[in-house]
Image (cartoon, rainbow, N blue to C red; front, side, top):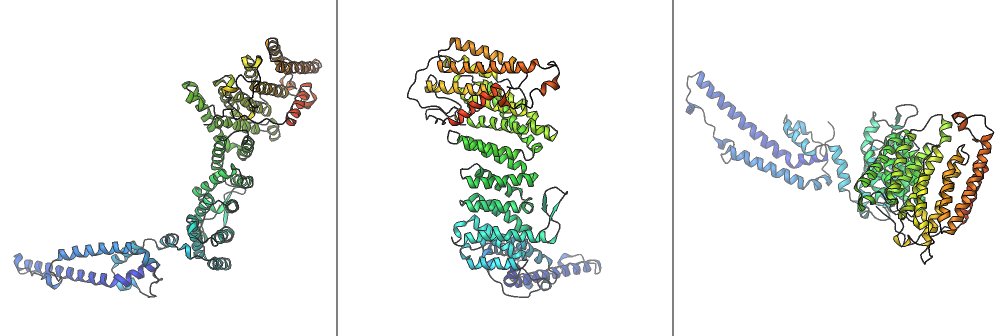
Length: 634
């Protein structure tokens, strides 16, 4: 017979004799009672007597000292209940005590008393699982020394001991939960042991499998080794999640990401723990620590590539982290936020068909917010849309769609991206957002989102009607009048979505709006400078500019528009000359699509003009945003 558990030995030593004696006493009483009934029946059927008085009476004193069977059983029930309560109170002490080395055959000793054995099993429940819990709950972290860790390391490295691994991992989990209870010089050693040595044990003794040749690998669960290490794996995944979320040390956090990446196939089934680690990685990816951000991003990217069932978690957590960071948007953080957008786009590009579903849901949510704001028409409803978080969301999806629907990439792959179906709904949401409050105070937001539309238009090779949105700016009185200078500082228009009322009639705001207007108009026509319809596209704009110049008192802006008109006319003549040499009409779409296809944009008159504008913009020092500019946060 196998060796008895500690709790069973303790029960045998302290309570077994009394329980067995009690059971024998009960059996003796039952036998006498049965004998008396049999004798009564014999008298009735054999002797013809049915007088109950003739039935032999059993003297209770022969069995029970106080003469009361009911009292006996009640007292015994109370005693057993009290014993159970006492055992529960003393369970901790009994578990930690070392029982005597007794070789007791409990089943033989009971001689068929299965009920006692069943009760004992109920008390001990599952010895293996209880043992794990006890090691975690009652381990004295203060007593752990570097010597213990060294011994564990040597023993784990020298032999396959799943029990020792379980002990080490249990200690690790207890330590990361209560790090202050561990000696300061011991905790780093314990963490190092579990991050460096334990993964090698899992990799050495656990096999991996894959459902298909190129599919993701996962740990094989149909072997004895997995049964030995399954509890340790689960605890280990949970421990990593706790450690990475509580640690303040960047090197430790980075080590957890690295270790988790190595063990992804072994830990892939513990989705809850991995989700926690992924969310923590997303938080550090969007943090200010550049090195840790890079490590976290590499981890997120690896998870997305290697584990398809975790890809949605990666996308959701990274998008959520990006939105939280967007709340801090200002002239100092806008560069970091744009970098986060670029890296998040890489994550979504890992599995386009899978990320399309999430993108569709998020764009629909943005549309719902816009619809609610439009129908409510209250200041609070407008704030749900006119804030940096919402605007950055639109810009992020515009950049994502632009990358996925790149016309050159699609031509090389020979198929269209699923994201192309998102162009129309996304453009509609952006146009609706721009027109929600068309006042000069929100011209910065208008320009910001028009640039998002231009990015989609250029990359996906689709025409988006942004010119009407730009021409509306010319109708504002603050653009045409002669503004007086004041002491306000220059506005960084690219990191602002709403200007303070103090700026509305200022020369600083007027100059910023006019400069941004010229840049965006130039970018639009620069993208279309090779278009066969450029002359027709530019005619209404040239007429609008000339009308504005005739009534405007803003001399600086008038000169900028006059130069734009010159360049537009020059490019129109250039395209017209190229068109005169053609021998096909506008209905021949195949020929229209390849018109000047191989000519670089910079070779066109307007394309060259835009190139010079960009170079001048890069050389010009960027102005600092005024503290008086009102930033809208959600």
